[in-house]
Image (tube, rainbow, N blue to C red; front, top):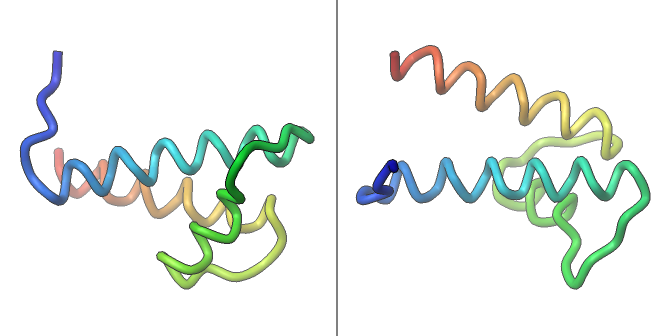
Length: 68
């Protein structure tokens, strides 16, 4: 089990969760909040839902590689 004990780890987990919510939005599922808008506001990414998903995935992969 991993403990998220730093603000950076918590933020990364939050972005991973929002990415999964955006993936569901792309497939047509809607929830109580709009992950697409939250991601765009917090990261400054632009484009369609699919483009933002791809950019966020690259951003998170890049962070993962720099942590290793």
